[in-house]
Length: 175
Figure 1 (spheres, rainbow, N blue to C red):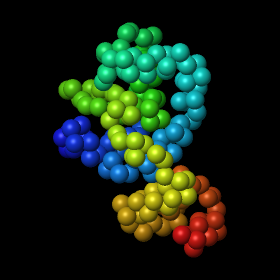
Figure 2: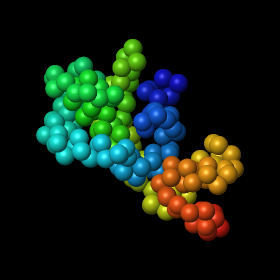
Figure 3: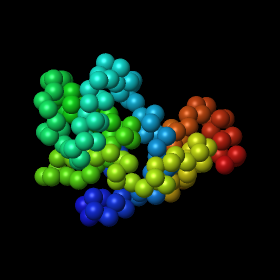
């Protein structure tokens, strides 16, 4: 799998649960990447660390693939994702799609600019409706025909959030 992920670039890793997806799925995933923000944590971090986010991107642009250990020491933080703010910045830059995991050394992620790792064709987001349909169908293929509760979760995962059962049924009928 490491060869398919880091040498052939047939797969990519993304998400808080670290999903491994085929690289052709990237255009359908980009909008979710751009919007990914659990309880507004990313937005709060980005607002309070604008300079750091920019500095980390510039450092990777200048030096190539880096891990959090390769970056100048940052400020200690209390975070599940990293011990220092530079590590949290790397995580959020990856989560929002600016970076991809270039490789791993003894499990440690090395990040690089998505533009250096993926062709331009794959870095163009699919139209929102098309991406939503594609992601929903992928969820159904992966997990089988859902019950109403699972359907709501599949739609949320696909980037759509009709809340009531009647809205879910109407959405299915349209699709």
